[in-house]
Length: 170
Image 1 (tube, rainbow, N blue to C red):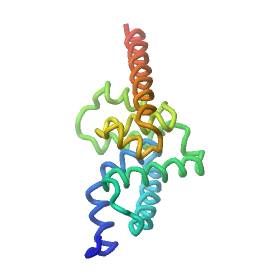
Image 2 (image 1 turned 30 degrees about the vertical axis):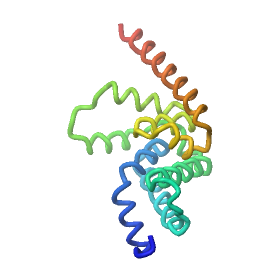
Image 3 (image 1 turned 120 degrees about the vertical axis):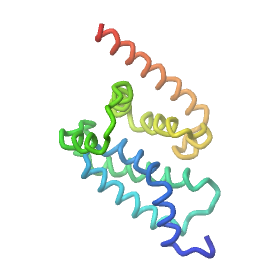
Image 4 (image 1 turned 90 degrees about the horizontal axis):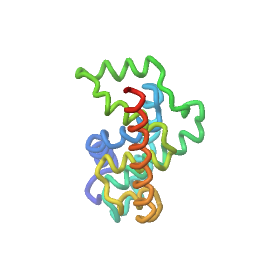
């Protein structure tokens, strides 16, 4: 970081890690407007935090933690945004962005993830993004063994919900 300006670092990180950051944003903000607002809040916090980056962890891990903390604070301070329901215009906006048919199972999975509590939702998204237990523990500030237990419970819950869903379709 010595030879690079804060603006160069910020631009590179936002460009490189925008998909990762938006996964966090979409997990906590359910309308297009809220997602844009939350992404802006995350970006501002990243900008402010760049001088504090000590390179003790991977950049992606550090940025994910910032995004997660901002998202959790944002949901606490903006309870009206956290009802977990998407309005029709946000769904329409998402569908307009995707030219492919919607995979019903993936759609079901993301709806179930939205129903999880904040920590379980974060763990699930981290797991889907391929983070290790160690990285998840570092980001969330809980032990690796607790991560393992929670992942087991989440998988069991999702499996049970899937079986219930399949039973209702018969």
